[in-house]
Image (tube, rainbow, N blue to C red; front, side, top):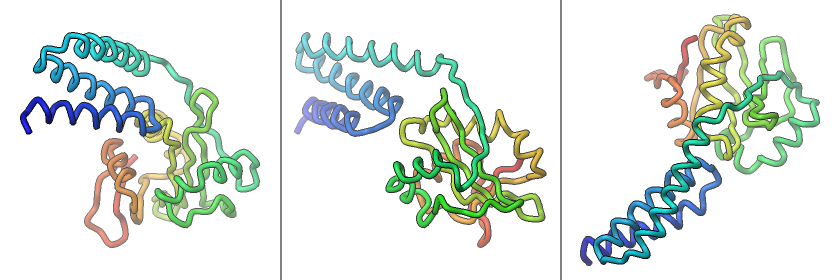
Length: 209
């Protein structure tokens, strides 16, 4: 198998994978890589139609990516209670995916004085739900920090932990910590947002406010 064949197979795989993701940004990036691979493949075999078609698709992807990154979206933070109907229905709808990130989590909880439960709205759609228990040292122990697949582009995390940092500070929280992070994708998210991995039996990740 020559380099030309390998590029062709890689291009096909990338385009197939792009159709299976449920995040628009991931789709555009993976699809763009597939288009670039097909353009290279077309150059190697001197197939102008392949070059032209994938160049057009690449241009479309670039236009959409620019729109996505430049669009000003409206983010809001609201507190919720266990009895709120909207949060119960949210948990039911996303139950399977949610439990791959936070196994055993339950929407039904008793919101004590030392517990915070918030939802992040993105253009009036629920993008994220967050729950944490605050100890006497000012640490907020994360029980849940779930973002729906459509909005996993790190904007929600940056809004929650950077732009709305004062919300946590007003609650007298000094650190946001995880006892464990069972999901590798969520672990990657935490590293990008700014959480530090700790070599501690009690804390896996920490974000200092």
